[in-house]
Length: 221
Length: 232
Image (cartoon, rainbow over all chains, first blue to last red; front, side, top):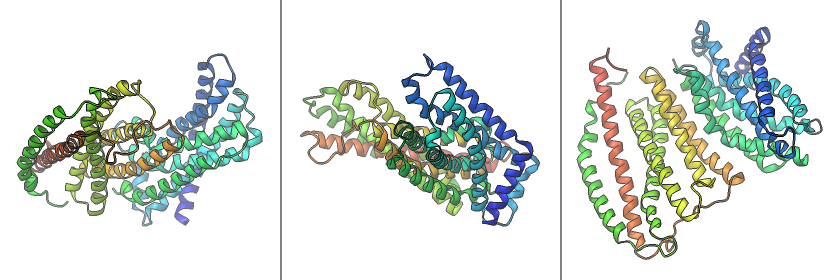
């Protein structure tokens, strides 16, 4: 547990001092929102509002891919990853620490993106803000769990930027389906549907446990 | 590093029998399919069943073997499991490609569309993506032990993703178009044997290709051992 907190603290402090990851993710997802706005015909209509949850999650996934790659590429500088791998602790906790840090940093970028998204697409998100935060938090947890595991794999391959989305996107289908359905339900009715949340909970739990167990083999140098 | 086993002799010795079994079954299969009755409703296009479903079984077998051997590799650190996993993924992707190619031909004739987002179809497509990514990961990773470890981790994650994908898509995806099961009686008279032999032929083809591919991988490892500078 202390390992988790130490890694989390280290990543957050590094991020706070440079603020480069959050800036890049935020700028990128805002750009994606802008591009969506102009690529959809006829401005804000009922139709664009109906597809808004899907678009929001696409922006989130793109931003997450950017941040996840960075979370391990900074560890490659000065061989920091080898140092982490050599420390005599259970590596599952290192994984959880990294995941928690990614989740927190992604969450900050997501919150701001959601505000801008609500303005651009004229969605009343403020009324469901808390429940939306729950859905986004659950979705991002699944995203960050397998995301962190395979970011650690992808940064040590050739074509590292290409490898992560290729590995990750087929695994993220259940997470995205659950998250988009839950978000759609929230925006349309204001109520949280149980089925997609249940799907998110199950997927998060399975991905977290599997990643926790196999992370040992990913770091093994 | 554990010593590389001498050219996995049992694999090489079983190549001839497996090849003969495949040839015999294929011959019988062709005869049975040619003699099987033409479906009253769908017409002759229904005969694609005898290719489509056996390929699907072979593809699923391939991915199952990959996942199992990935887990065994991580557990035992024995390179032979890694070679088997890699070979099985490649053969699985081959059969999966055949399933995805034969499916739309059949679908256009009977459902009227080339493609429908039916749960089983979507999951097979995702399976194909997962194992293509697995093969790409193998070819983009340097160092054989690291390749084996990374691939094994992805192979295991992939096998957990499949039931989740199926569950998710069944919950929210399109309506099911595939028949639920193939219980006794869902095939017309004279179709059962052709189907059964088709499945056996598909599995024999899978086993034979898997053995060939694993043997190749073993030879490659042996070459790398003899000539360390020219190896990958």
